[in-house]
Every structure is written in structure tokens, then in C-alpha cells.
Image 1: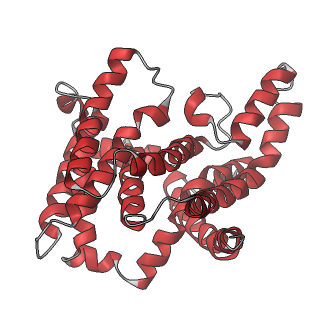
Image 2: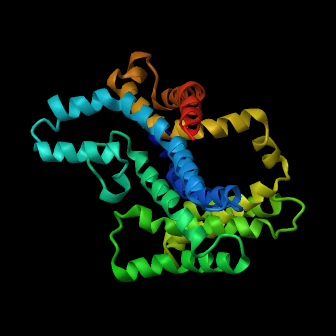
Image 3: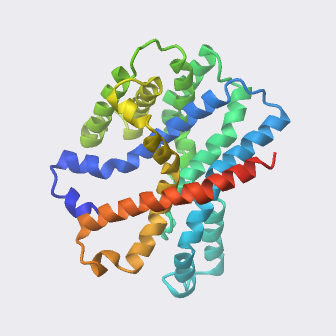
Length: 322
């Protein structure tokens, strides 16, 4: 919806404006960092494993299930009366199976677009499965173990390319981001900087430069590889705190929006389906840019309600089972 406005910008700024999808990798690194900090001293017995897996499921799946409910009329229309009405029953079942069990990150483009960002949840579930195994084998506490994970993060992309692992297996390719986050958690304990702004300000500027001039970066390495250490520095800086930007992000309002950010992420495409179904920008006589701003504000509001009344209660209920 912001595309016409983006095209009016200088090309580097247009690329930055369109480059929001790259922040998904930031959250992959953040996942590793948060899990390593949260479970740093956890003894991995059977009881704690059950609590861990239930907590991870409760964190992700209720919001995702809500997104499927929101988009379900369009799924029905596609498969019964729309473009997919003539598809083989097996293919329809395959699509539903993929969406129900969050397998989109393994299968590539499914050509339905019901909730395209959900591919990243496939990655998160693999990270959650791998984390206890890493903690029990490689370890997450010592400097040596985290140097091993950091080396794995650096070498994994080259190894996968050498082995010819398909690009469609995104959870495998993004394990390097997860490893980087775990290693960053150990580095955080050893940093003595008084203000994280010495890290996050250069990281933000580097991030923007990489997005604005990708062709320059790609002469040396792929974009994800270049962004990986930048994301680690960014998160380490914010974790340390300090500076006006970190103070803003530490306010109660920013904290609540941060908690609701997952709902914003997973609901914005299902809500866009409804917006386009009723042609709301045309109905209200809005051109694309004002309509996009209003839509964005509506997503924030609806996602905040979804977090408060659906996601958080479901999370607590599921965790309460143990």
C-alpha cells in the first residue's frame, strides 16, 4: 500500500523503505539471545523439558491460530469457489496441512498467500526444538561453547551452499541467526560498556547502509551474512541500555507495543485480505498513502486487543496446564 509513495523516494531510501522484511532476521537472532538468557541455568530434566516446550508452543501458536481464523473465509473461497476449486483434493489437503502445522518455511511459495509471514514460524519451531539439544551437547554457558556456536554461525551458510541444501528449507538456513543470538547472550555478560548506544547506533547506521546499497554488499557476501553480526551488535546495544532511543523503548507504552508486536506481525496480512475484499481505500475515497497509514494504525489497535484478550490469556492457560 505504501508502494506508490516509496517509488517517489531516491533509490537508496526506497530500498530502506521496502526493506522491512529484513528485520525478520533480527528477531531470529533475538530468539537465540532471549532463550539463552532465560534458560541459562535450567537443568534439562523431563519436567523442565515439558514446561519449556509447552511455553514455546503457548507463545507462538495461539496468535497464529487466531490469524488462521481471521483468514479462514478466504481459504474457503480459494479452495471451494475461487482459483483453487479445480485443484486436486490431495493438493488442497497439502495446503491445509502446511498451514495447520506451520510448515510453510519448508515448502517454498505455496501460491496462495493466505498469511505469507507465517513461514518464519517454521523457523522458530525448529529453533525451539534445537535449543535444549544444543544446551545438552554443545552447551550455552561457557565461553568455549559459545565460540563453537559462533563458528557454526559463520560456517553454516558456506556448508549448506556446498551441500546444495535447497533455499526453500528456510529453517535450516536461518539456524545461523539463532546460533548468533545464543553466542551474543554470552558476550553480553562480558561487556563493560556504560552505554549500549556505542553499539546500537553504529549497528543501526550499518543496517541502513547494507539495505540501501545491497549490490555493493553482495559483491562480498550474501545479505543475510552481512546483517547477522549487525543484528547481534544492535541487540547487545539495546540490552545494555543507555541513550535516548533505548530510554524510549523502555517506556511502558513501548513495552506493551513490543509485547503485541507478534500479533501485529502475524495478523497484518489476514487483515489486509479483509481490507482488499471491501476495497476500503476506494470506499472512503483515500489514495494509497493515507489508506496505508490508517491501515497500519488499525493493525496496531486490533493486534493490541488480540494480544490482551486472546494471545495472553491463551498463553497463561496453556502454561497453567503444568
